[in-house]
Every structure is written in C-alpha cells, then in structure tokens.
Length: 205
Image (tube, rainbow, N blue to C red; front, side):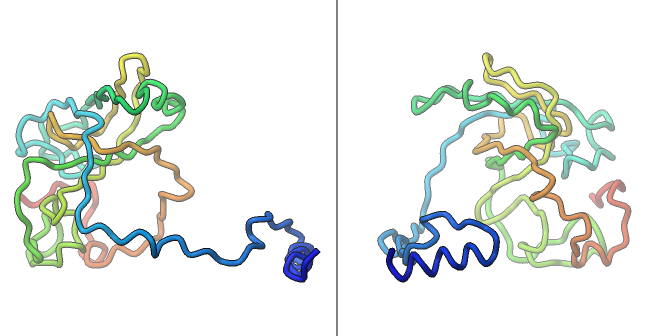
C-alpha cells in the first residue's frame, strides 16, 4: 500500500467510518474546462391545466385562498408532454408515494422586472426584488408546493391541489417535496416576519 492509502485507512478507522476508495484520491478539478454559460435554454416538459384563466382571482401563493376564485384552494392538472429523449410515463413512477410536489414553472405572461417592488404584505413600502416572491423577475421562474392528489403514469398527468398557476403555464420540472431537506420551520423571514401578519390573511391588492 502507498502512504496515502495507509493514511486514508487510518483516518477511516479512527472515526469508525469506512471511507470509500474515491474519497482517498487527490482532489480533482473538472470545472475549469466548462465556462459558465451566460444564456441557457430550457424546454417545456408539461403544461398546467387550472381553473384560473386570468391573474385576478389566481392565488399568489398555494396556501393563501382568501380573495381567490371560489374562495378555496382548487385542483389542477399537470399534463406532461411526450419526450423523444425518454419515456415520461416511466419518469412519473413512484411519485404518488409523496404527499407534496414542487412545480417549477415559467411565468410566460410576465414581462420585465424592477429591482424594487411593493409586496402585497406588510407595510406598503418597496423592498429589494430578491427579498420578495414577486413574479416579475429577471427570469420569470415560479416554484409552487402543491399537494399530490393522484398520479396517472399512463396518461402522463399529475393531479394536484392548491395550484397557484394560470391555465397553460409551462412547467420546467417537478420534484418531490422532502421534509427533512425542504422544511425549516424556525427559519427567520426578514421583513415579512417583522410585519406580524397572519399568513392566512388575504394579500393587499
């Protein structure tokens, strides 16, 4: 054995954890060969089918239902498109075992953005865009946590509850909501926490 291998084994034994062989190799540098792209291209993998046809009455967040159409959270469908690179019906397998799903979308009706915005909660004052959930952003990306109602792999659809997206919204990705890494109940919420408002209260329109 080389000295490096011996030292690695010793470190693993001292901690009581056996280190994998790859952890004992010298550090590698792979990123230098790939410059950061200044533009990226994404494809629509699914389309939202929801009861909301206009911005007014569409929830601003999945959990806020006051002032929305019908006054309650509504069901919607994420309709996946065929993909020549892989079988989408197979990709949807095992998703039904999760209670919630992150829906990453492109808010295609939005145009432009401002570095300072007035949020619909708290004192009526402008905040830095990136300290808010405003939908008008440099890249109009949306992220919604929705409850899974049903998954039909054969039809390539996921029925969800609590959708806050307009009908026809392009979906870029879906990921299961995993509490141990997605939930931080005691996290500080900056100016929003200082506002002292009940999260279930309606937004200021």
